[in-house]
Image 1: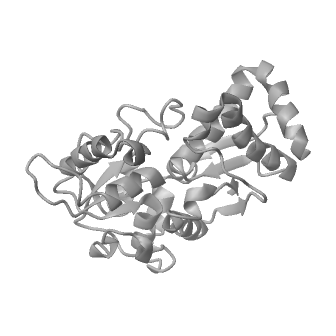
Image 2: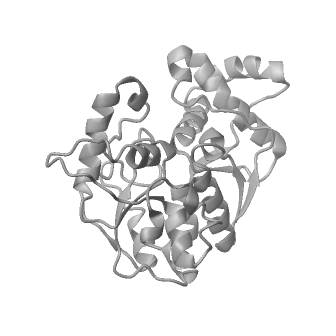
Image 3: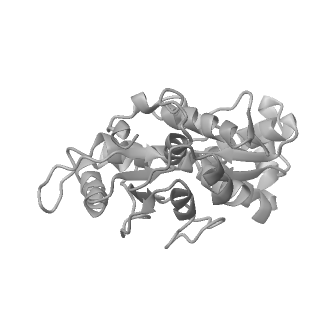
Length: 284
């Protein structure tokens, strides 16, 4: 298995532990990741409010770079926001070919050209469908027996493009969690929005959304996610998020590859566990 790898800005900044654990786990699973040379920001959630064209050109530049680099033409993207932006361009080129000349006019300034041959895929898609729970279970050295894990998908990896799972009742993480020896914690907030970047502009409203998610996870040993924004909101603001009972919630928020890596016996340093703000070593 060989993939072009797009880390995106979060994985080289606030979510470096997601980057480190993704590299460590994919290596343990025998997958080769080739980081895209010269990659730039996908526009995150800000570009679309500035210019619709800019929100397409920024991801398109990265897809054009991947095309120029040649095989592998499958791009693995761990960040759900980056995935959504890159996937939007892939889908726009496929369904609206009339927009492609406009994108290429902008890309020509940088000497690039896009034809639409790169396939954008989320890390969870590749873990659940290309690799699969059986292969993941085969690298387990320290089964997470007795742990109850709440799988948190967030919004962007399945909406509006339900490529690999049901956007309303997703289950793709569940066989992976069970393959690690843990059990899936039953809850209702697996796809609820965490407030995303509203934590900066509508702080109090976002805190209420975060508090609802954390409160529903009460009783779980950890929440596991595949989105840097979700992980940051649930982890950094869990002590200030309001709950119905007014209780303080203290629960580890792990990235899925960190959980896999713990079960595989990969060292905490290679998984970036010291970079988490919550206490992931509580379950190690």
